[in-house]
Image (cartoon, rainbow over all chains, first blue to last red; front, top):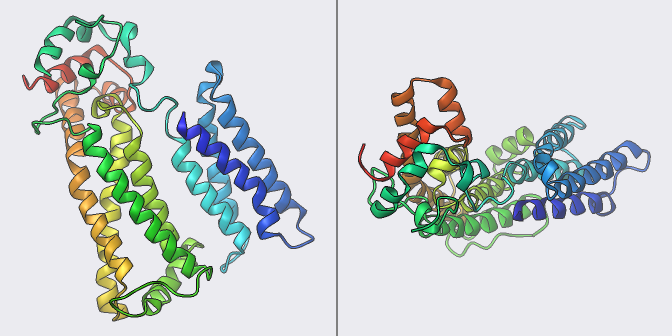
Length: 130
Length: 209
């Protein structure tokens, strides 16, 4: 679940970033975009801890694509710092969002009772060869 | 003898051909993560310069790296990516470390998609790094010590990482040869078990294939 923890931290950073980089005074939409995306990132990461919504972290990929696209197309080069920050956070979310929960262990489908027949039958052989 | 329900370390830590060791073992992957971590820090430092957050970049050999980091090539890439090229490099190295850390010690079988993603990050990145170094010498006509160090790390990473990717591709190829089914190949790639893939993996891991 380390990946989900990193996502929460990225979400917190995204929420803080408009206060650090500042948007031009009239651009309320940019503030709203940062804060709503931050809320969505933290929510998706937190929901992943609850079994029925365990795959919620994949929503990070959607948010990530939005952030990258927004940062890229909202202003021409040179992109303001706040929008470059959106691109960076988006890239990081793309990377961490795809990491499964409990990534250090085999996927659930491959574990124990749900193991396909053949593998169970030959498990002893496998161990002796390993 | 472990119960069939439990996946023990012995189950996970198996030799994968063509090697006589487990290419997904932590001892194989941790060095990749550490090296990639170092390269991430170096690239982030150079990105900080390109962002104007630090005044100069430390370079005891070539004196100044400004000519490289402020070069036309770097400026052009900044315009394309919207972020400095060093920041993009830092992101790619961080990816090497993150994709190196994720997954069990038998991930060549259980999560091929992750191993392939890791390979896509490590191998083309190393090549891009090498190309950028050649560009330094030929187009920019100047050198930058930290850029050279990160480029060397990229190439070392390829050497460290290709064995696991190779085993994984070999396993997927076996599954394809056995089943000739796109559906099973796709499921195997995504890490979903099928009796056929389990059988292939078993033979593969015990060198009986």
